[in-house]
Each structure stands twice: as C-alpha cells, then as structure tokens.
Length: 574
Figure 1 (cartoon, rainbow, N blue to C red):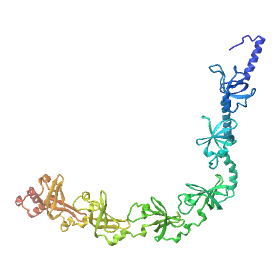
Figure 2: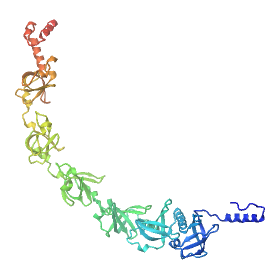
Figure 3: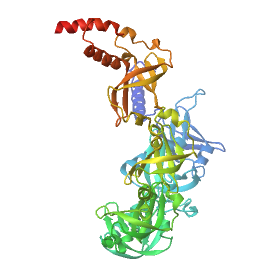
C-alpha cells in the first residue's frame, strides 16, 4: 500500500529512506527460524519481541517445560523459534520453539551423518527392538537397535542409561525424519586398531595353546585366545570324523590347542583347526584292502544309508543299496542304531576324493548264489505267492529268502495271461519251473505253464501242408475259432483262409460244432506259431486233381465248379 505520494517534500523523502533501510534489515518469512527476545514471562506464557512483526509472538510455558528450558529462560534472553504463521484467524503470530529445536537438531544430524562424525547422546529409555537415544545438543530422539548396543550380548544395560556417550549415525530417513544410531560401531572402531595389531602376530601354521571354547554355531565353534581374540574353527576342521554339531565334541569353557590355517588381515579374522593337531588317518589307508571284512562303528544314520568309522577319524559311507541282498530301499534305521559295530567289506577307496565305500550285504550269504546252486535252471520247485501287480506275480521258493518273478505270459498256454492273472491271490501255493537266473543282476524268472503239458506238443510230428481235422468252436466276422482233434488249444482260421472263392469265404456258412478239414499253412514250434487254412487245403486238392485227372470229361464228376475250365486251359498249354 502506498503511504506517501509527494516525494518532493523533504520529510517524505526522509521517511522513505528510513522505511526502506528498516525493511532491508528484516527478512521475515513463514517456515523460517527466527530469533526472539524474551520481553515478558507469566505463569502460562512467554512473550517475545521480534523486530519487524506487528505483534508479540507468544510461547506456551508448557512447551518450554517439555524442552527443559522453562527455568533457563529469563527476560532479555534470546530464543530461537519457528515462524509458522505471520497471522492466524485471530490475527496473532504463531511460533514454536520445539519445532525450531527439532529442525536445528535434524540439520546437525544430517551434517554429522554426511561427514561420518560421531555425535553425543544418552540412552533415555527402552523400546521394542532396542532403545531411545536423545541427542544431547539438540534433544532430537533417535533409535538404537538392540544389536547395536554393544559388540557382545548384554543382559543388563542399566549402567548405560542416561550416561553421555558417543554414537555413530548409521541410517537417516530424510523423508520421515528418523535416525538410527550405533554404540557398537564406536566400540568396534576403538578395538579395530588394537585387533589389527594382535592379528599381525599370527601366521599360518602357528600353534595356539589353551584356547577356550566360547560358543557354538551351526557352522563351527568359537574359541577365545588369551582373552584378546576370538577365532573360528569350522565344522569341517573339528574332526576327521563326521560331526553334526560342535556340541558333540566340545563343552563351553574347555581348553584345546589350535592350529592356525588362515589369516585375513582385511576382515581381521583368524581361522583355526583342531583336527590338524592329530595325524590324518587317511595317510595309512594302505593298511586296508578291498573285498576284505572289517569291523565298522555306526556314527550317523541317514535316509540314504549310514556313516561308519573303520577307526577314529576314518569315516566311510554305507549306502542303503549295500545293506541287503533282497530288500529294496531298506532303511538303515530299521537295521542299526548309532554305536553298533557291524561287519563290512570295503568296496572302494578313492585317495584323491578321500572317500571310502563299504558294503554290509557282502558279508552275508548271497541268496541268489544259494538259489542257483540249489535250484539251477530247469528245476521245478514249490513256492508261495508273496506279492502281485498288474502284470506279474512274485513267488518265494521254499525256504530261500528270494522273490522270483513270474510274468503273466508264463501262467498259461491256453488263455490270455492278464485274464489268468486275476485267478491268483497273495498266499496261494504254486509249483513253478526255473526259467532264468541272473546272479549279478539279482533276478530270477520262473514260469507256471512250463510245468504243464504244452498243447503245441500235439504238432511235434506234424509238418507244413499236412491235412488235419478240426472242430469249429465258434465263428465271428474275423473268421473261425477251431480246435484240432486231440489238442487242447484253440486256433483261428482267418476269413481270407476259408475258401478260394471270395463268395464262399463267409464265416456265417458255419454254425459251430462242425468238423472240417484244413491244412497247416505255417508251423514254427520254437516261435510257437501255428497257422491253419481251409483255402490252402482246397488249393492242394485242386492241384492233385489236375495232376491226376487230365481229361475234361472225368473232371465233371468232381466237386470243383471250375475244374472243367482249368482242364481246358491245361490242354491249350500243351
């Protein structure tokens, strides 16, 4: 608003100069921190004077009490406040001392975080997951995680409460205004230089005497060396034997000698070994021979087998496939328990991989060899069905603990094998013939039909093109089902093999029960293949008639409709 117009007046010029100089000195904006001078203090309020404001800002005395400044504030002293509004609905200036303190404190925290400078604070209270730390300079509150309180677990932190100490800023969230600090990092930084000097004294191959067991982990055991250094012995470096957890070997507080096997000066870590303090049992593995029986102690049982010791430190694997001759997928838990001493045979020694494999079943009698000696191929024995699936039976023969295999195709000569299989059940007694023995593959095949008379033996004295008499059992669109006289086996005469003339090759010509003659068109007893044909017999008889009856007239009395035509054809050829 223009408050003066006539600048020619000396008084107006002087007023303009004074007003401009005053406004240039005072830069007041909302959202900025300004300095206010305490002008008056009452029971409830503190009145401030700020140059350039049209009214006195007022602070609530309770706000200053929460900041711990109520007793320190006196008339004439200055205090920093945040100018929130130049004028509210009531026309008053709104300021806040606590918000100004937080903003100033946050700026200091950001500066310390960027410069990686420690800050002074004190632990004021506990909270979920850690503690609350107050920044001594600004009163800002920060979070101290429980894992960052110290470099070792502390059950009681009462001695640290409200004590001024250094903290490292490890995380700042500028959006949310949250800060996270660490006391552990300060402690570790002091120890780091000392720890580096300690580690410089150690080199690979050194022997550490009397290191004390300090704690366990799933991957190893921690030892304390002379109260100045913690070292790790990895699980694989505890013993030459298999160790599942360090508590199987060590107890807290025990002392053991260690051998230094690694020194990492960057990470300030020293790796040690206990097992290398004793001789390696694999160095005299030459004392053991393959395929020889030894005693082994079961040290651990797994789903795939068991780990055993031939001697302390010399661990071997007994796989589940080497537990039994006859049982498949047998569990070591059902056969042994930890601590048992069992007989075994060494089957493999791999020096490069430091691996020894053993077998327990090789110390037992091989039932397949016993079976082969007692019941060679061709033997007929009594058995019991112990199991069954969709295509075979498993038969246990007498007192030998071996399951033999009987395929459904070896059940019968006459019927379909799968249909015949349905007639048998577990527990049935059955006489079988040994057909095949494979000791190395642990397989024995037997048959039931081989103990019965083979219907194909009826054809043993027969030959191709020979005429036989058969009885028609049934008919269908595909042909005739027939059975030779004196044979117990059915055969099929295909529709195409019923007659020479296609018009006569109809299965419907027959009703069943008739006896007819046919010829053997194919016979191979080794392949068990027999084929019968009425058409072939008709061709054979026709050929014989042509050779025997060369005149046309004589052929008219024969039961062949085309014989006259064939005879004329023969005469023409002459």
